[in-house]
Figure (spheres, one colour):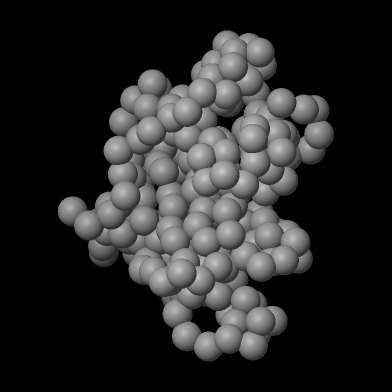
Length: 209
């Protein structure tokens, strides 16, 4: 199944990612990164528990857990402007909930593309395709994914260590500052902060393109 068609289901973990079209960047300034993060809080965080993220000049990665079905339905009902309730829509279409989650996350990228094109006086498609997603099928893979996400700017040669990159969740996880990431849950997968730091210091190579 194409990665942009993999269903997003409650209580499951996913790797969500995408790339800018061609050789372009979709983050040019600090303001771009911050605008995207603010909209990430608006569109994605209500539906997903964030376990790690990294924003790079021409691509991004999220490791997320879709929230439980009851919570998802409550949120979607609040956003619902149609005649039918979410429950009624689900009864008519078994794929409705997955599609609604995907649409809400896709709203982030649509909003950002409009912002970026306006601010940078640009026209046309910004992302290579609809956002891609992979199901995270094990705790071991999740731990690798979290580290892989934080290692991106190191592997790309922008910085020497994950802590030097401003636009990832790494520094928020190892600190006590306010964060949109589920810090405690992330650390629990690594047992201690010290082990989290150690694991994030090693190069991780995941099998995806």
